[in-house]
Image: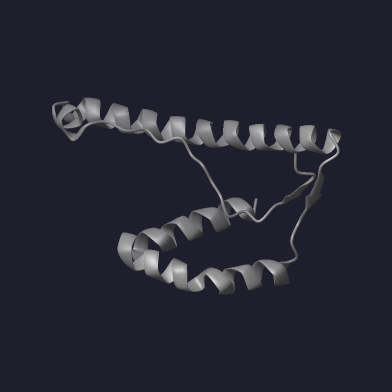
Amino acid sequence: MQKYLTKTGHVYTPFVLLASQKWFGSLSDEDKALVMEAAKESAKFQREVSRKAAEDLEQELVAKGFQIIEPTPEALAAMRERVAPVVQEYSEKIGVDLVEQARAAMAAVASK
């Protein structure tokens, strides 16, 4: 088993709430609003649970002898530079606006 973990922050695995358009479209406006509100609340809860689980796992790994490495800002910048062409390619495919929204959301969380 590996002994090292580098916290690059390049992976995030949220749980996704999905519903068919047919089902959602069949709801009244009031029920749609209720579902959307519940989805927003569950997203917040899911993020809290995921972050706590990650913190707990990190502590468990350290207790088992893992060495956790925090890359320097310079190392992270070098990684971003190397993957920039891939980010550009996929930003164009999925939408630059969506990528920028995701980056803004990640930055907001990272600053807390």
